[in-house]
Image (cartoon, rainbow, N blue to C red; front, side, top):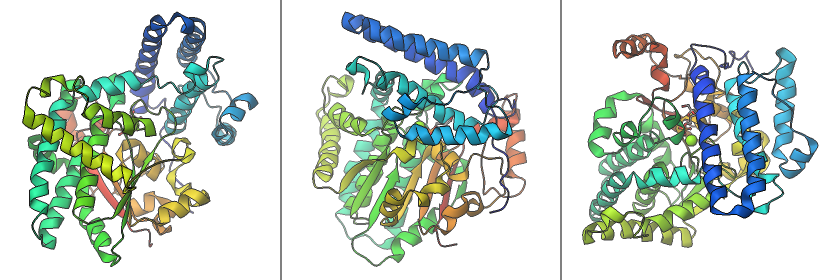
Length: 457
Ligand code: F6P
Ligand code: MG
């Protein structure tokens, strides 16, 4: 393996890591503290154990402020969550080059470490109530509730799709539909709660949810390998095709992914879909298995989408989609999975070392990776030249036999596969839009990339 570029570090003012650790992480943790206080108020029995957790969260804020050294997880912590042993190994390795502190260490490792340490506070509480408590659940639900118009629009689009699919479709039409529903899933990723802790408003997020906006954003897709993925899917003559989606965020993005999934199943493009979730609360809004079930309940809860329930047609459109998803799930055509690998700080080119997961993914005809964090882990979150080919940046994955499609709206620094000169152009353009740092175009969530590797290099 050739020498990798350096990672992005938290003390680099030209990296999105910098505002993230100085502003976004504290805001996220303060939000957790606020939610914990509300939770405790609702049940006085939780007061003492809840306060313990709040204290730990407050200590973490102090550790950021003082730029403290990042500590190894204790044996007791590893006993509760064996994944943490691997975190310790990577911390020991990183410390060999430079002492790892919160404000100076490598961004990707520390951001993963952060969500693991928060999880540790909950699972190690003496009060079992907190053990499977998701401190981000309220936020996830509230934001999904505010996505009601986007949800309705997609349900109506699905109604039309069912009439389109009732006719015999030629491959060209099917390809166009594939591209449209991939687009829906791609831009669903712009709805990311962790961004709400920064300079993105809820209005910004809602503004990328509709069809008109998806069309407008078409030219912001800087790399588009979709046709390669399409050809790859068609190449296999098997009638039974499996699609895997390594999910990102719950709520609207998950809903958009499920709408894409319905299209893929209804059209016969694939015969089963495996959805990969996180098994701990992760990067604020990531999907855990329970979030899938919560979403199914919310869709048909008259209280949840109150303002839509005045129209019978609206209710009908939503309930059709809900039933369709629930039935596919019941008949194991939509399968929900989780694996501790997804919440390690590993780059994804280590997947082949995780035998059980690797074998499972090798059964797939296409593995879609949703979102920004998955892209950072695919490319290692290191400082690649933006013209580096995607297949170089994913290292051993490019020859792993795993067919990979990444759908990512750009919310961090690393971007690869761009034509020469485009990065420089975008830096100028972003500056001319009134932003101080042109380099931050790649973390603004306004641009996207669709990158493919057939795994056969
Ligand atoms: O905006 C940056 C960030 O918080 C990154 O740390 C992370 O990669 C990303 O957002 C999360 O976005 P997504 O949900 O698309 O993975
Ligand atoms: Mg996410």
